[in-house]
Image (cartoon, rainbow, N blue to C red; front, side):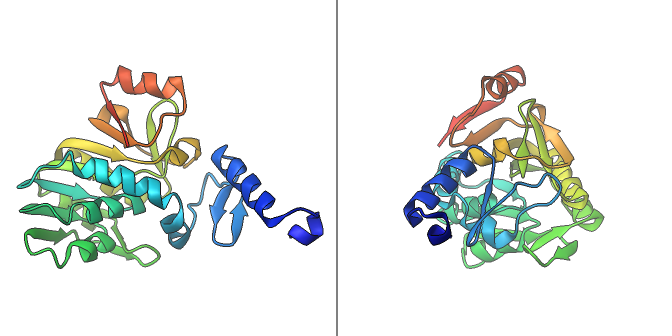
Amino acid sequence: MSTSLGVAVQTIRRDLRVLCASGLLERVHGGAILPSGVRNIGYDDRQTQNRATKARIAARTARMIPDNASLFLNIGTTTEAVARALRTHRNLMVVTNNLNVANILADVETCEVIVAGGRLRRADGALVGDLAALAIARFQVDFAIIGASAIDTNGNLLDFDPEEVRVSQQIIAAARSTILVADASKLRRKAPVRIGSFADVDAFVTDRITSERLAQSCQDTNTRIVLA
């Protein structure tokens, strides 16, 4: 591509970073694509996106969770980063519908891991559907740590799969406190299914807030913004 365009590879990479940062493109393995409001990008590509930022968000979130606590971790690469950051905690009980989270914590002897049953979504190790929601309804935990595929400026939390959303809503209902974890790229994305809003969230851990309107939405709902 650099030869056909007559520009350096570094120039193309720089321009792609700018376009992705503005929300006009989404990075994928080997390049970039136009963003979709009805279909999520692949799990492998999501794993590589903003990895360092997700690690910072995860580390900051882990500091908010004390030892001897019970919590939910739902589907997403950011919640998986949180699971890695929690490996040094002691005496946690983690309920999850994410097989990747379960595997990350499987060898931590002081962490009890409970996996909610449901339909396996092989693409990303998610357990979704009514069976997963029914299993989660049996619990009342200290913290829910949730991700979302998109967040609009009105404070709505959005995702792509209605079955996943049903489980996320049950997770929020079954927790005493809810922490949303999402990097700023989620603030430029669109998704069709509503999980809830900042009114359902006690704290929002992110790397930056991209608009005054979003900050006002958090203030209106008493959602604490925690910057990583």
